[in-house]
Every structure is written in structure tokens, then in C-alpha cells.
Length: 276
Length: 256
Image 1 (cartoon, chains in turn cyan, brown):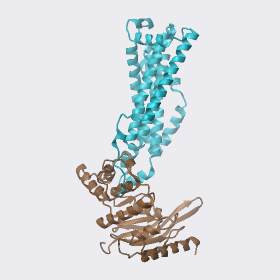
Image 2 (image 1 turned 30 degrees about the vertical axis):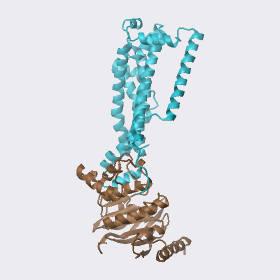
Image 3 (image 1 turned 180 degrees about the vertical axis):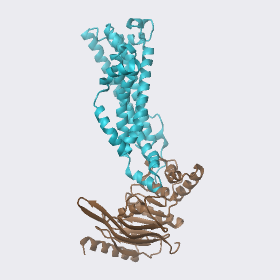
Image 4 (image 1 turned 90 degrees about the vertical axis):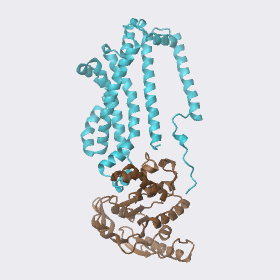
């Protein structure tokens, strides 16, 4: 037996901050503080209503959760609007995941499915999801319209990443499975599918980012349906720019949190699966 | 060895690759019989089609012509009766050592308790006790190939096909793995076909060395190695045998 050490399990532990990571966090903090400083100074120098200072935005952000205060922006309290946006988000994203994963697997594994699916994908992919918004409002209404936009935004990144994952499967792994007696369907379930999981997670992360852009744009175009986009849109119409910024901050927070969680899971999945 | 029963028989086997308008004859009229429990090395320069030959036996590639029989039954397509060990190990990275070794048993539909029992037997055989729950990326090259061997053996194939299995290992690990393989072979009495381009490895390991010519690949000579095991690489007989085969390969290279 070679003198290899017994594997160190701590490599697989969940939370672990290395020295390099710690210094990264210091840089991140400097970057954010610098950004806030530039914003603040800018708002003082510019002295225009459309650029409120960070404390004003923070104040509006807190007030926007209060039912009484939110009457100023047409009674769109932040809590319920975030909930409305999240609902659409989950629905649209879930739909994208449920459809894009099996389709990506089929198009990656079978030449017939690829041949049938690819032309449609290539034609639809370059159209920005936002371009569909007017149609979706007419066809699906104020709630489901944005849902469909999110669906489109998340669908293609997940689809193409899953397809790419299937095509990246190491052919010797498939050979190994064949010599161990695996049928084509067993190769799919026991080799191709697990191999694709990290790629799927990459698709989810990319899709999340795009989905947040889509939802706000869709809600702003059809502000009647409510949502964070409606807060941004309504506040700017009536000149309450601090509330508009509060809505933008909310989107940033939601985006960072969801993409962050997704990236974290993505990384952990790769490590757990021994693929990194 | 189990005596004189034929395990694998290859008759007039030919493999032709289409190459534009032309055809490339990779393997030409290969005839070979491997006895039960025999250790056969197939040796040849790179590009002689030795890996193609092994892949055809494994059923991973189709032959153009000829016949391959294993234990009296014709070989068509891949099957668990022929285990294969790959140069690149080809372990499933998301599976632990145990679950890699259990793969073939899972396919066969063997219940979990029985699976674990068989897997443990082969993990112990290849000397990986204590590493059952490690992932392949936590193992050294030599250990990975031990998993590869255990995984192929756990399926209890009639024959073990090894495609330059130690080619990716450093010299020291390679020698150690050769010893280990001979021990495993002696314990299990498995029939083994081993592909290599190392004359030293072939003479050290096998009962017979089959030398292939290159383009087209034909059986050039067959050397029976009767040295008792464990073999001493420094012994005169070993050196002579190795020299004979090396000279032969050199003549072939010069086209004599």
C-alpha cells in the first residue's frame, strides 16, 4: 500500500473559511463602503431629487414596510409586494426547471431530440425575454405574464447547461458502465444523470440572475399587477425617488441572496460529488 | 491453473476502419486461444491495434470479420462476463470506493446487503480496507486502479481485460501494482488478458506474451514464459527473454 494519508474529512465540511477567503472578504467590504461613499458624495454634490442619499433610501426602505407610510406610494407595502414578486419568481423558475432539465437531458443524450429541439431553441434564444412581456400580459394577464417572462429567462441557461453537461460525460465512464453490464437506460440513470448535476446547478445560478432582471422589467411594464417592479415604477411616477431606490435595493438583496445560495449549493454539490 | 480448458478463442478476426476512400486494416486475421486461468500479455508498439483488439473482446467496438468465443459462447456486444480495467481508471467520481465496486452488482439487481458483502470481499482483496467511504479524488493513482480492479472483479467475470492498467502510474507504484496483481491473480485464478507496451512488464507478469505487428496488426510471435514466480528481473533468464523480445520489436521497427 502506498503511503497515502487517510483522507481528511474536514475538506468536506460545510462551513470553512480559509485565510485567502478572509482577505477576500476584507476587499469586498472596502469595495462596498467605497461604493456607498461615492453614492453619498454624488447625492450631495448633485443635489437632485432623483438621487437621494443612502440614509434617505434606508429610511424609505424601512418605511416602505409600514402600511401607513406606504400609502404615499399608492399603498404598495414592501412586504406583500416582495411576496407577490417571489410568488411569480418561484412559479416561473420552477416551471423553467421542471421543463428545461428533462428537455436538456433528452436533447443532450438523443440525436433525434437534439435535431428536433435545436432549431427552435436557436431561433428563440436571441429574443430578450423582455420582448415577450407585452404579449404575455395580453395572453396570460398581470400575474402570469411576469411568470412567463421569468420562465423564459431561466429556461435557456438551464437547458443549455444541462445539454452541455450531458455532452461532457467522459466516454470512458460510459464504456466502464457498459462492461459492467449496464444497459442504455441504466447508463443514463447511473452515469449521465449524476454527471450532469453540477452542470445543472451552474444553469440554475445563471438562470437566477437573469430571472431577477426579467421579473422587475415585467412588473414595471405592467405595474397594475403589483410586485417590487410596481413599487419602483409607481414611486418614480409620483416623484418619490427614495422609495424607487428602496425597491431597487430590495431587488439587489433578493438577487444576492438567491444567487449566493445557489452558488454555495453548486460548489458544495461539486465537492460532495468528488467532481472538483 | 485450472488445466487445459479454453476460456477465450479468437478466430480469423479482422478489424477495418474506413479512412476516407481507403480502408485502414487495424487488425488482420487475429487468431488466439487463452486457457482458463492463464495470464496473457499482448505486446506491441503503439498504433498496432492492441487496444482495439481488447475493446473488441470487451464488446465496446465491433469487429469487421471473424469469431470470438468465450466459454463456448459467441461474444456479441459488451457484457458482465468480461470485466475491464482501464488505463484512465474510469471510476465514477461521485461514488465512494464501495459504491464504485458495487456498480456491476447494482446493475445485476443484487440486494444491498449481499452487494455490500461481495464488495467488501473485493475491497479487502485489493488491499483497500479502510478506504471504503473515500471518493476517487481522495486516492492516489495506484489506489484508484485497485478500485478499478476490485470493481471489475466484483462482477465475477469469466475473464479480466486490462488495457495498459498501470500505464498512468509512476515506475515504483507500477512495480508494486504488478506484484499485487500477481497475488490477486494467484488468489482468484482469474483468466487475464493484459495489454502493455512494456516488454519488462509483459515478461514479469505473464504465462504467454503475444507480440503484435503494427499496421496491420497481426500476431507475430508467441513467447511462453516458463520462469517460476516470483520472477527476478535481475536473473539471466529474465534478461535473455526480455532481450529476445526487444530485439524482435526493434527488427520490426526497422522493417526487417
